[in-house]
Picture 1 (cartoon, rainbow, N blue to C red):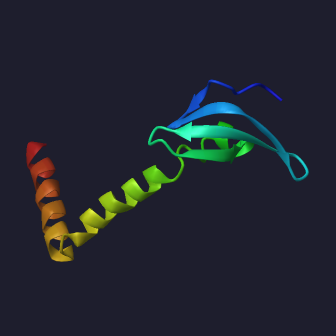
Picture 2 (spheres, helix red, strand yellow):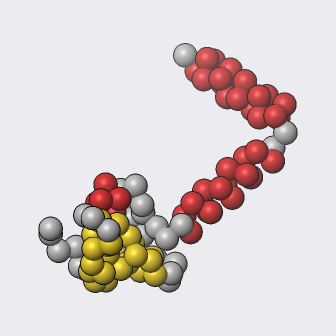
Length: 90
């Protein structure tokens, strides 16, 4: 097991080793850029599957919901206009 202390993965800064929980899961105590602290499994931390305490997921959901607030007809029209502009450039 390598020491991850003082390393940063996405928005998570690794503070210290928590230890093993269960059979082979090693946990690290991390502080997110937003200020929250969380214990994170080493495998998901190193693989990049977890990059924040969850705050970035809520940011992504908000930005996605903003896109979805545009009426479908307007999104289709915008996409067609963009495609037509690209076609005319060629």
